[in-house]
Image 1 (cartoon, helix red, strand yellow):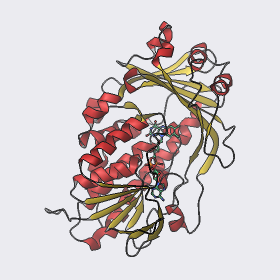
Image 2 (cartoon, rainbow, N blue to C red):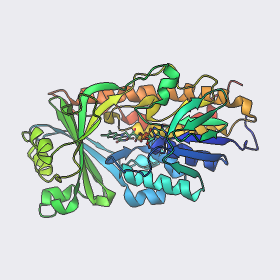
Image 3 (spheres, protein in one colour):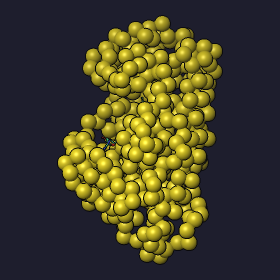
Image 4 (spheres, rainbow, N blue to C red):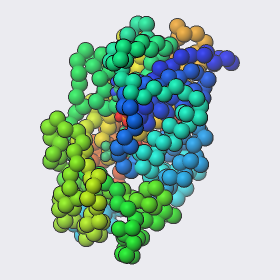
Length: 403
Ligand SMILES: Cc1cc2nc3c(=O)[nH]c(=O)nc-3n(C[C@H](O)[C@H](O)[C@H](O)COP(=O)(O)OP(=O)(O)OC[C@H]3O[C@@H](n4cnc5c(N)ncnc54)[C@H](O)[C@@H]3O)c2cc1C
């Protein structure tokens, strides 16, 4: 089926992270009226570099964001895997024609820049974005939410993108479910290019043309390094057994020395990079993912989880934001296919049918990559590249709606 006229749906979205904002923009572009509810009073811009691969970048390009994202993102052209101790090159992948082959670039980008671009687009489209609007209750039958301050907000459909520690998940499962702790954490920081200026080997890393991402692998850990913000910063993120995040803390500041000393015996180039870490803004992140949920749908079928709330994954998949972006595009495409509101539960069912297997596969790839890279005799390589060749909009247009 396919309707010539799109129903003027009221879409309420909980959470204005990458998944919530993408869904908001995609829904507004279909002509739906959108209200976004975000619990924080002001965006914190926590986070650092992300890879946004072709499967997700093609969605963002389709939203007309190519030019803005090219201003802050760098096209990843090459990945070099290095042996942890002596820096021997183990594997090299060149992605010269990726855009022609897969329909979008692989961007290396700061999460805050991606978020800003999506937020600006949402504002340009005139969406209502309520800040400091924390949802505390859901009514699945008469799809609506109540905010902490008592405000009642109703919609035809509610998309919940409240992140990996989702409280909404509790409503579906009947109990709160902590994400699965992998046992590992990530140290994450960005280094300003001025720190690399007087060293030719380090300056070389900041090249934005034919940009190279380095991945050091082996000995139960791995580290990625790549430039972001058009070569203004070098992003560095490691994964190792957790130290300060084994308990209830999810993000903890650590010292530059702690990060550096942990890897002082690794490849001299890496050691040199880490010796330039800033004193502030080095954070340890607890690394978690989710076992596949049986359902992402609230009873009644008019409220659904999207983004990390339903399929949080390890950074070694480099796809958490990517899957949230795919979710946003898919749900808007599916909602645009219906002719009356009674068909919303069928759309959300189709959404889950399309997205759950895809996201389960990607969550698993994150676990597999980490396992592959943490072997003392790791050879590099990834199980993730096949994931990039996916057109979520085409998939959402093809899936049958069981109406
Ligand atoms: C070290 C590291 C590296 C990563 N690298 C990559 C990468 O290379 N590529 C990639 O694609 N992904 C990567 N990711 C993952 C990516 O950052 C996340 O998957 C993505 O940001 C999740 O987006 P989200 O919108 O689902 O959730 P979030 O960004 O967590 O957003 C949830 C939003 O909901 C709001 N909220 C929560 N509760 C409520 C409530 N009750 N009411 C209203 N609002 C609420 C929150 O304030 C927040 O704004 C990485 C993650 C880490 C930790």
